[in-house]
Structure formats: structure tokens, C-alpha cells
Length: 151
Image 1 (cartoon, one colour):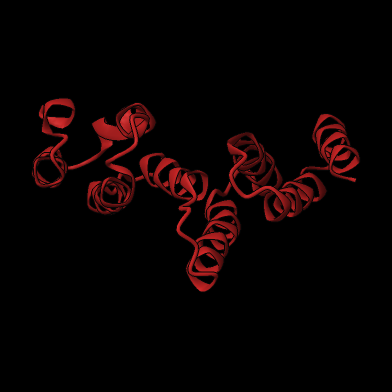
Image 2: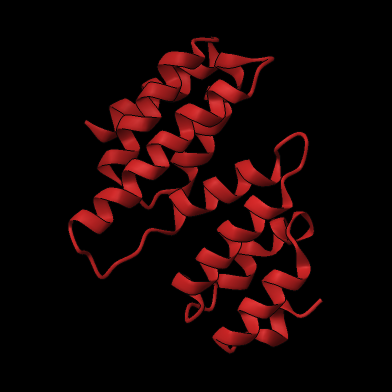
């Protein structure tokens, strides 16, 4: 079933049915919550569905991401999901006008959760220019990963 939904979501995007595609990617995320490509494609489809306004796309994707994080907390899982948190950071970094405070807060929370993972810096690297460098550096120093995040 998952492959059929993935194929359908992909074809819907190709044929311009972005709203249905975004809904299917959201469904796929609920089945496989750590598949980054599903989040990326949901964001792309949502952005196209609601163009030229991005606020509705951000709202729809934020709900999916927050629901996944809430479900993780509800299940008291020891496994934390990187993908929903990264999409929240990506959307904050693309905001117009920029909101470095929100981006910094999300990045600091990400560092707090994933600082022990080797991928932490590489995950965040694309978004660091949009963050408050002092706040991020201070949090990184407290986590012991300062050499990567010191600007």
C-alpha cells in the first residue's frame, strides 16, 4: 500500500493536483514518520497548492510536523524524529520577512535533542545563516559541540 500511495502522490504532483499530493504525503508521513523525502515533498506540494500565499502551506505542514512530535511524546518513545523538526526549521528559515528568533529557537531545540548524533551539524548547516549566531553558539557550547557551531 505504501508504494501505491507514494506513486500516487508523485503522479498527483506531476499532474498539478498538489492538494491531493500533499494529503497523500501527509498520510505517508504517518506511516513512516522519519522519511525526510516525504516531508520535503509534502512541503513542495503544499507550497504549490497554496501559491502564491505560503502561510497556508506553512500552517498545514506545521500541523503535520507538530502532530508527529506530539505523537512521539505521547508514546514516550526514546526515539526522537529528526524529519518533522527539520521541516519546521526549514520553513522558519524561509519565512518572509525572516524571523531569526524563531529559527534560532527551533535550532536550539534541535541541538538539545540531537547533539549526540554525528549528523546534527550537517542537518542544521543549511539553516544557520538565518539564525541568531550568538544564541546558537551558546547552546552548542553548553551541549559540548561548540567547535562545529562557533561562528
